[in-house]
Length: 219
Ligand code: AMP
Image (cartoon, rainbow, N blue to C red; front, side):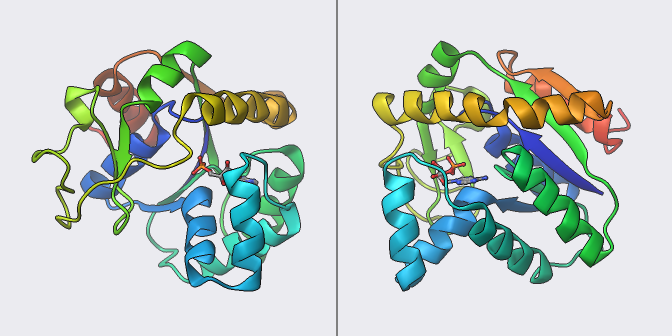
């Protein structure tokens, strides 16, 4: 099983991905993390990516397609996996179909978590993540708070607030996100494969809905 999240920043996809990984053994591939890994290598491509990401713009489709395919080839594809932040526009959806065909993987389950800008901004200001294992937390939600303040529950690494999690960058990313994803959302809607979830609901409620959709929750 493979899942695509379509969700603007702070809609909750990072939290649901962490929970699916922890409770149900899903692999989690975040396009943002794949890009940050490349930046951390300090390569020429990494430096180019860094300047694009820090200005809130989108990275080139062909480059990202290659990085995502490399990442998929490096994981155990017999386990369920989810993509967070990819594909994000029509061209990338076509690229992803190409990757899936080449790897012999079935069609994705597409989950669109819709959220308004104000709710998203309030959430993002409380967001922290683990620089080591990439788990996301939110200081504004009891559900997603770390057990010990400022420390990752899983690997005990000090948590960080991402430098691009500020109001100006968020609004830029949110607007860019909806400008770029409209065609993608319409494509999956037209194909009848888009499952829409109300992102303003509590993480607890939405996680219950998502696990039912994926058939991993038998409660
Ligand atoms: P995120 O971690 O999803 O907030 O992504 C951080 C940054 O990585 C974005 O602001 C973009 O610059 C870049 N990025 C993430 N996903 C994509 C994508 N699908 N296509 C192009 N650029 C992306």
